Every structure is written in C-alpha cells, then in structure tokens.
Length: 129
Image 1 (cartoon, rainbow, N blue to C red):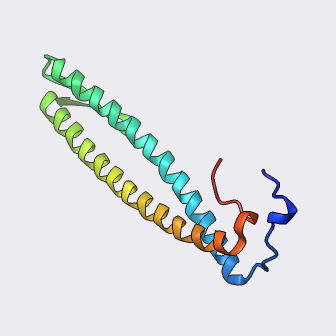
Image 2: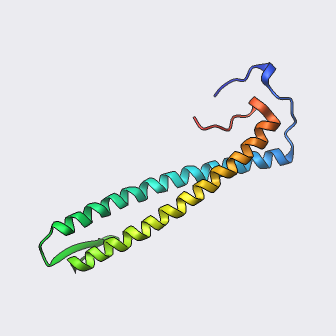
Image 3: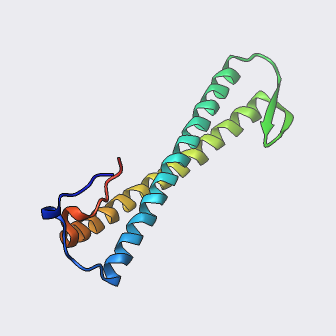
C-alpha cells in the first residue's frame, strides 16, 4: 500500500454515487480476475485436447479409450477424433465469449477510473499491483 503525501490528498467527500462507482469497479475487477483464471483452465484443456488429437493421428488401432467425466469408454478412433474436434470448437467458443466479456469489463473500468480519478485524484488507488 502506498501512502499519499498530505498535499496530494483530496478533501472531497465520498458521496453515495462515488461509493457505488467504487463498488462497481471492485466487482468488475473481481470478475476480470475470475475470467482470467477460467481462461487459463480452458487453455490448458485445449492443449490437452490438441495432444490427444495428435496421439489419435499417430495411433493405428481400431479402438481407443475415451475419458468422459470420470468414466472410460471404448470407442473408435474416428469417434474419438470427432469428439476432440467438437470439444475444441466448444472451448474456443467459450474463450471467444470470455474475451468479449473481458474487453467490455476493461472499457467500463476505464470509464469508472476517469470518473473516480477526476473526483479523488491521487487519493484513490484503482490499479492492480
């Protein structure tokens, strides 16, 4: 935490509107961190699916074991490959939705920063460190 010198402090009274904006910014910031964590999980899953697809291409057997949830299923290479492709498409769609939501959150946070820094100056800390 950084201490602001007394001459840089703002004597502005915190109005209800200001507190609502601060709370909104905090909620958006928490959601942004959640989205980043979720995105990392999905990206790791995509890497595993890519590895699985590569292994399927190299395999020469008729049957493979496919893990869905906590169960293994005997299936053909073709069905397993199709499953992997569908999962990749689904996860890529999720990543696209998350990216769109992240962009809208960042835009709204920029608007709130402008308002709050304009009102409180250096007396308020809105940046992640």
